Amino acid sequence: MVTPFSSMPWKSRPDCRAAFSLVELLAVIAIIGALIAVLLPAVEAARESARKVRCVNNLKHLSLAVAKFESTHKAYPAGGLTAKGLGNIRFGTFDPRGGKMFSWVVQVLPQIEEETLYRQFDLRRNVLDQPREPQATPLATMVCPSDDAQGRFFVDPILTTGKQFAKGNYAAYVSPYHIDHCDWWPSGLAGNRVYRPKNIRDGLSKTLLLSEVRTMAAEGDQRGAWALPWAGASLLAFDFHSYGSGLATFRPVMASIGHTQLPNTLGPNADVLYGCPDAATARLEDMPCAEYKVATYLSAAPRSRHFSGVNVAFCDGHVAFIADEVDELTMAYLISSDDGQPVDLP
Image (cartoon, rainbow, N blue to C red; front, side, top):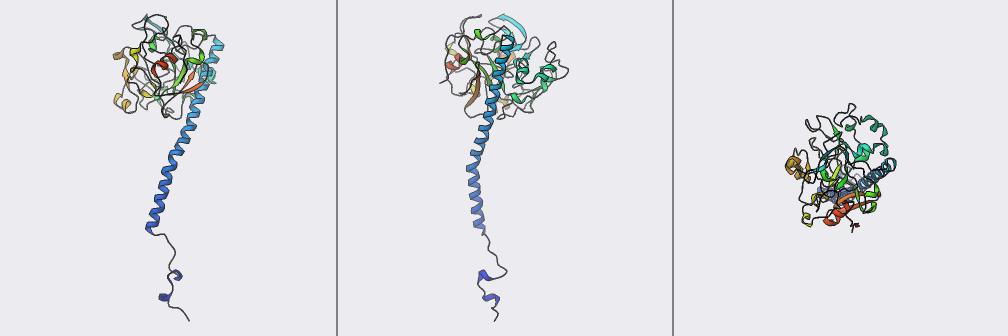
């Protein structure tokens, strides 16, 4: 006897299949969303940790390149191969836009396994007058993957005469004060004067050499342009003022506290650049800038996209992490190479 279809149990009916209800589907979707929300920060943290390792390795590589340069040439690379400035305390002794304008990075290219690129530079000509355009070459060693410097260029119709300059993420400290005074009060590097390890009287392990910098997508922003010895491009200074003048030992003026170039712009000072084409966007991106023609001095802060600080390298090659909240006087002593106050990071 055949059982009528209408009399069959629901689960036995041939046209009915087990299925999720709408409520069940929404519950599953909600659970998956919650799991993603929990796991994404952990995944991103792991990725950033890997990126940070690469950034640290690049700093290590660059600091060793500077040491190899010194070993070969018996002096550190100049902060920039430039002309001398006016030579007084008001205007400084180092003119980043004078002379041939080759940065310290250009000088150490052979030490970072970029001999071929180095040979493309004609050191008899200005860096703005290079027929083979080597300054437009992106360098993997100069890029921290936490930033977006890869593929970014600095170009300005006046400042670079329309030539492209590739951007990177590392710059050298040349002064606890202003970049244009780096031959008066130097740091890990100086300006044009002959500068040797014996001049770093506070000790190689107590003096900062390199730090990270950030870039902007704006082509008119000079920060990160590795071939130029300019503020925020390949050079940094802290803007901590000093007593005295000339080649006297750096003696910090305590009134500078609160007005210095701390990591990641915690201090109120903007990077002082030759041009600040998009100041509003720069402020929104935590990269404030001001123009040299107004400020009449040059300095720039280290910056990164790492949480709470920046990676740095010391003159002896060791790498450390400096927090945004670092004590300003300690930072000044770490940057200055001859203040007579060798200090350690807390």
